[in-house]
Length: 162
Image (cartoon, rainbow, N blue to C red; front, side, top):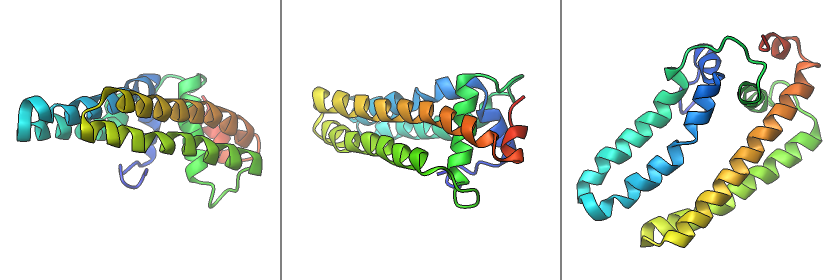
């Protein structure tokens, strides 16, 4: 996913800004409204869809590097970096199992969301969105725990906290 968004060291540092983390939560509702807008806008719905996708890409780059990473949101981003680096620096099995389970919760919401958006049905759209957010936010909370554990074991990760 990081490669898809072209996340380099500077982008990750900027994304660790809590404003980036919290405003990133607007991406899914923006995508939902953009897709739903096909009812009102027809093919012009591609404009809000492209804008929502642009926001998703732009968000990690928009905010400055935070003055401190000693907050929940920043540590969640640092944990994501640890998670993505698990091929080079292995993480404890208990974290891996939990994170796969939390990702699965979010994935379970996807068919509901797609079905609801395709059929323009509110309840499946809401159920899917809630499952995706529940899985993602719980995943981020677990990222904080992962980062806390791994920064004690790896000097590079320790450097990220300031």
